[in-house]
Length: 351
Ligand SMILES: Cc1cc2nc3c(=O)[nH]c(=O)nc-3n(C[C@H](O)[C@H](O)[C@H](O)COP(=O)(O)OP(=O)(O)OC[C@H]3O[C@@H](n4cnc5c(N)ncnc54)[C@H](O)[C@@H]3O)c2cc1C
Image 1 (cartoon, protein in one colour):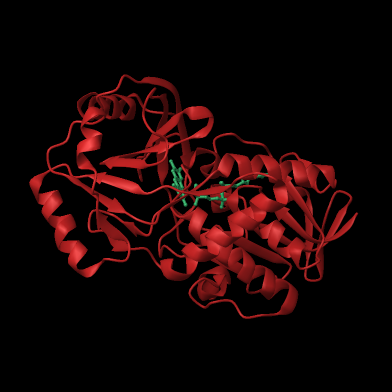
Image 2: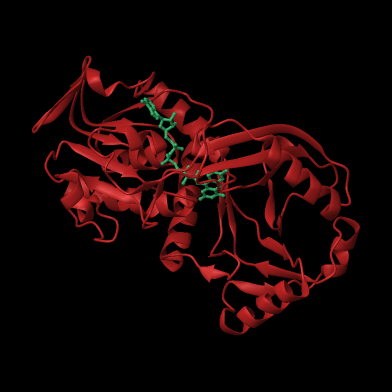
């Protein structure tokens, strides 16, 4: 079979890139190994315009958020499912200082921050003493539904290979690639943290970042907000809630840790007034780039090989915009933004 692009990985990146190039009339084959502990399958799916203790606007959010909203809405319409909803963050201030910090920030950031007017309503659900701020608008992407429905969409068209890709079995030349009976003009790696071991891209400035979350039943908790106090409680599939997450930069393995579970349960036992039951403990590695911007584009010396990766902690907001930009670059020769073009690392990639 001859296609334009062979895409490795069907996480958020491979899903959105394959859709973007197909919309421009190109033919793809996507290969995915079905691993269940990937960043996309473990992520809560929040698009949050301000992050961190200092409530700083996230990079390019003014363009990324509306673009993401439109993309997930259109994709949901195409697939017959709802993929995105508005779901604001209620930030329960943990201390007087935290409340003061939020209020100070509010004087300069009134586009994405607000005071929550209905603090009293939440006293029956949570224990808190210093008020609630609101981060708005926040969006929640149903990544599970997107991956599942896009996989089915590709399978029906016979465009998905459900297997592990092995680079040693792939012939890569200047003019194209061959993998088994698949011939393609280019191969694009959207394989998340696995790209850290890719011979073409292992030298990029990757950073390891293990994240853990708990999945819980919390009967009675309204599922139309994200609740934050140190960690986030986020509506998840099937009426459950996702609680997390950690950032661990030094770890020996990808196992869930008893320490995270204990610490999170202690926090919940103090903060949450409702009974809860933990039903799962999930973990994955984020594909993080040290300069916090994605890796997009073609290898500087082997133009039949490309990468769409390094989405870090923000794949849901970053990937839609840059999938579209990369597709326009591949198909119509449009320029890539220098800040994301993988050729900014040409010196280390050609060493
Ligand atoms: C705990 C946690 C919480 C997060 N929360 C959020 C959030 O709320 N909002 C947000 O925007 N981001 C969040 N993220 C980050 C987000 O998950 C990532 O930015 C994004 O999912 C990366 O997607 P990806 O497709 O690039 O990589 P991945 O999700 O890792 O996908 C790579 C795919 O490639 C496949 N693959 C790998 N190697 C091979 C191979 N050899 N052959 C075949 N297939 C292969 C894998 O199985 C996988 O399907 C979170 C991450 C974690 C870990």
